[in-house]
Amino acid sequence: MSEIVKTSGKKALLIDGKAAQAEVLARVAAEAALLKQKPGLAVVLVGEDPASQVYVKSKGKAASACGFLSVQHDLPVTTTQAELIALVQSLNVDPAIHGILVQLPLPKGIDASKVLETIAPEKDVDGFHPVNVGLLATGLTDRALVPCTPAGAMLLIEEAAKALGRDISGAEAVIVGRSNIVGKPMAQLLLARNATVTVAHSRTRDLPAVARRADILVAAVGRPEMIRGDWIKPGALVIDVGINRIPGEGFRPDGQPKTRLVGDVALQEALEVAGAITPVPGGVGPMTIALLMSNTLRAAKLAAL
Ligand SMILES: Nc1nc(=O)c2c([nH]1)NC[C@@H]1CN(c3ccc(C(=O)N[C@@H](CCC(=O)O)C(=O)O)cc3)C=[N+]21
Image (tube, rainbow, N blue to C red; front, side):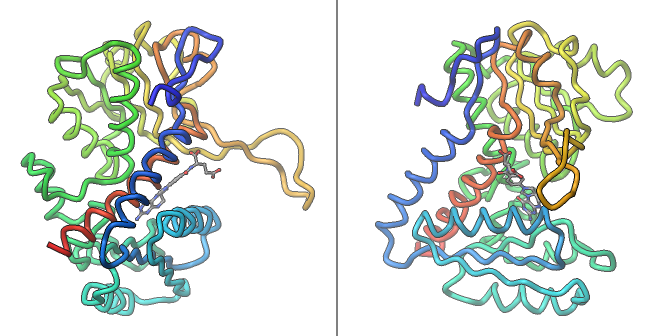
């Protein structure tokens, strides 16, 4: 376990999401091998967004590494909402499929919430269905499928808290961002661990001052390097959920300008102040994939009961 948390040469410890991912995937693969029927994951991609194609590819790779059945449905950007819903309904009743993920964002003209509500809650490995949202909010986490990104972030928080010798219980947690996908479920998970939770957002007055209160600071706003070093309480545990592609230096072989992946936290500044931090890339992102496999395994196990 301890190789997940590393020294950075600066004040902060670095939390290695790739190493944590490898541990989760190894455990999932070992458990999947014991099942009579292998877990089946269906990923549905509508349109040709290049970023989405990259994520979907890494999900397929991880599923195969876990010994899962992995099925990908690529639909044209012209797909109608009715066609997409029909595909979801056919996956709902497919006994080989235990997990269904419809990659977001969906093309214009498709109402994502209508599609997500069509997914059978027990196959909703993203945890976005209102039934799973409600189970999490009610604290019924033995039955809920929990959204992968906050669930992965929570595992990293637990590792880091252990390494720093801190309690999550009673800690001040501040989440910057209130999305249904990250901010809100992250608040539920931290609340369930007895943290004192503040959800801050774009209308929060004096955001830097609110952030500075945090023993555990979760950045999930989607704005490159918005959170500066002086927003961070010295010694805080910082979880960076942001994945932002910004212009880099120079050009790729194909003549396109290079891009660079950065988080919502200014990493170099944060390393001087924080007690521990997740980098981007190599932090929460890989854990999202790992927890998707873990959710698919859980869905398969619950289906076998
Ligand atoms: N229904 C649905 N479920 C999702 O979980 C979902 C989605 N739609 N749409 C898009 C976002 C984004 N997402 C990521 C997963 C892994 C990395 C990841 O592994 N990132 C690597 C770097 C990857 C790179 O180099 O581009 C890292 O942070 O180290 C990033 C982003 C899942 N998403």
